[in-house]
Image (cartoon, rainbow, N blue to C red; front, side, top):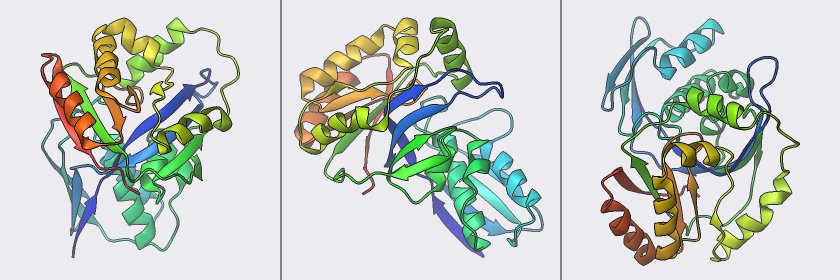
Amino acid sequence: MEYVLSCDMKINLCLWVGQLDADGYHPVRTLFLRLRSPEFLRLRSSDRFRLFHRGDPFYGEHIVERAATMVYDLKLSIPQVEVECVKALPAGGGVGAGSGNAGAFLRWAFYSAGRPVDMAMAAKLGSDVPFLASEMNLAWAEGRGEVLSPVSAHTGDIKCLVGFPVWPMSTSLAYHMLDQMRPHVGPLPERDDFTGHLNAIEEGRVVGLLPNDFLIVSEKIREEYIKIWTVFEASGALGWGLCGSGSGFFGLFKDHDCLNRAARMLGSFGFVKSLMRAEVIQ
């Protein structure tokens, strides 16, 4: 038996973060957009679970190992497998690379057992894991990411450029700094507060910098983000922003010429490590 599982990634078209709760979690409200990822898992029959890894290095326990421990503890009727995890995206980029790996494994495990994915369990691995373990391509998420609602929009014609700078951003550090910089948090915006932005992007109208509470953290640490936003504006992007709580950034375009113009300009910056044209999954 061998399965090859694609591991998608995501960007947050908006991201609002609530006050740290008593359990040590931050509630979020966000709109996830699914993108095609170059990463994949290869699963083979085995006498016990094993994880092999190649590509971008990681340290400590991999998120797929944590997902597998949760799954096998449930005693689901699934075989033991060895997993080859082929990595291509940098850690700390904010596109949910590891979460996409975990999401793909969870989706395989629960579907193999004839059960829907346990979204509450998936959320224990990260707020973007439920979305990446789901079948949704565009979804509004609340709570710890486990409360998902599909959103209908014509996003298939959007062109997306994703970039990664030479510096990573730790999720835990980003949340810690956000708490320090913003000790008091009011009510989070509602889903309808972003509807106008989404409609404009669908219609090919410019909305500019998209809302993300981590912008105050990233722009404080690295002023280079201001240069990145300027490039997106000058190149004719519809919208642009930060990839979740990570260091990555993205721009949305209605045509390839504008995207290529932005790629050339961003590629000239020494602090940009890599750029990729990412397919929006419709």
